[in-house]
Amino acid sequence: MTDKVAKLVIGDQTHEFPVLSGTVGPDVIDIRSLYAKTGMFTYDPGFTSTAACDSAITYIDGDKGELLYRGYPIDQLAEKSNYLEVCYLLLYGELPNKAQMAEFDTLVTRHTMVHEQMHYFYRGFRRDAHPMAVMTGVVGAMAAFYHDSTDITDPQQREIASIRMIAKMPTIAAMAYKYSIGQPFVYPRNDLDFASNFLHMCFSVPAEQFKVNPTIAKAMDLIFTLHADHEQNASTSTVRLAGSSDANPFACIAAGVACLWGPAHGGANEAALNMLKEIGTVDRIPEFIARAKDKNDPFKLMGFGHRVYKNFDPRATVMQATAKEVLDLLGVHNNPTLQVAQALEKIALEDPYFIDRKLYPNVDFYSGIILEAIGFPTSMFTVLFAVARTVGWIAQWKEMIGDPQKKIGRPRQLYNGSPARDYAEITGR
Image (cartoon, rainbow, N blue to C red; front, top):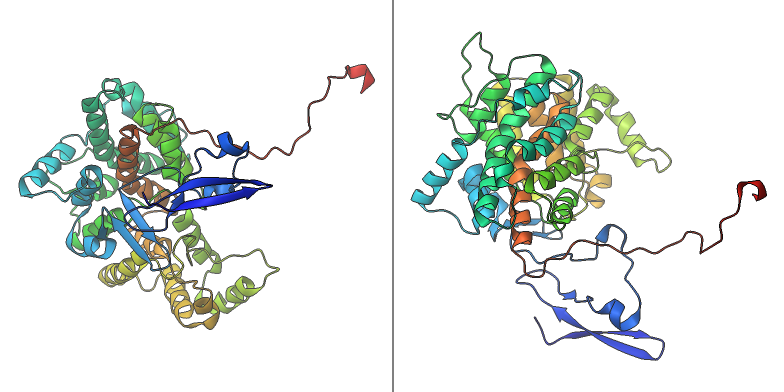
């Protein structure tokens, strides 16, 4: 809180509103009393100038290219931490000590199996269903299987639901993948770390032993870490809005999964790789660059620039080095799609058109390259994003439930429809 006030003059009336300050970031004008004082609302499509909540979880400075989880810079966490430790940090506010980490690791690991009846649930979907369609349905159905952790007024049930969600989401995702390719489900293994276990469930088969490459597992863990939370984005806001009605946590996360599916949000890495495949070969890049520069051409370069980051995406900086490491390890440089990606990246980092407009390769561009190289189809990219983002959604949901200022979300509108009119009988229309 500051002593500053903002003054709004409407006609001959002046109204004052308090100005609030966070620990970092811009001040905000508290307009909760605006309607009571003036009879007016604000108009802010997309809520891009509106703070809808208080939060102590994630901070983004788009101008600086800065992303903090609970105050820790993402580049430090990417270099020194791992996904499960980041999960603990996001959920509880502080990095764990050795004993806390061991206990949390065990807790998550022991909850990775899903109810056996959920296997039958998958068989109700068509084989060619998009894995995100399956994810949305299955995550929502968890409330039917785990109804002993849906009472949001019970702190213990909230905690159990949180652990279950983080632990079971990789299993649910891997099952969606296996079902889509007609292979048997693979059960989780408690002797593997979080990322290795997920890769094992995705790529192993009963017919032969599968060994997870540690470099690939590290890259997967990094992708999870970089996507764990991202402030009040569309899917997180969806989870909070659903949660504001006191819906159960599984329903709230299912709502987040559905929102994430959009190509403008979580589907961006899938869209970026589809674009690379549309370009096809390196020699066609100039043609598509010209189309991107043509204001009259609807073609857009996906995977470049970011709505929030106006300088650079700090996650992309970390991911760039990992992409090179994975490609070198797998020796897939002859892949035409990846060749196009590397050539396009070089152009984007050197071409004045891209530099002036800050159209740098973003995290979706690099994560798509890595996931393609590992062997995931593009239809699974957003699914992996959902696995990573689950902890962020859960942390934000828990924070909202415990907020004494919590209210059910109810945006207002600027109505442009017909004013009140009388019903006319059909014969007189």
